[in-house]
Length: 149
Image (cartoon, rainbow, N blue to C red):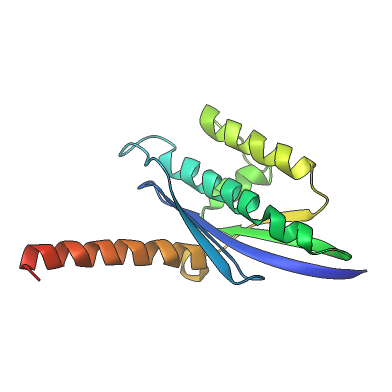
């Protein structure tokens, strides 16, 4: 049986943006959710865990279409603490993150794929670059408004 590796980059921002990029299908998605409160404890980790959750949910149909292959799905994030939590190397101290984690695990128990959670540096994370572009465009619009353009 042939092995098929599918890599998905994910990123979440406390300002309410969650994005993922599937390298196999070359598709990306950006979601806007309620932003975390400024300087909220665990706010960044919550968004990163939600980004992983939505990346898996949004790509389930694409995974199911690929039959007769052994699939290894590699979910990559630039949040080392989130990856360590998903790989059970560190504990989860926040109740909301624990609920998101439990939802991810429940979902993964129902599918027959091998899922690997891997750390990737921020400079190589395509989903992070998507969010950076959103910030850059928003910043440019603000500057243009100030300058009267």
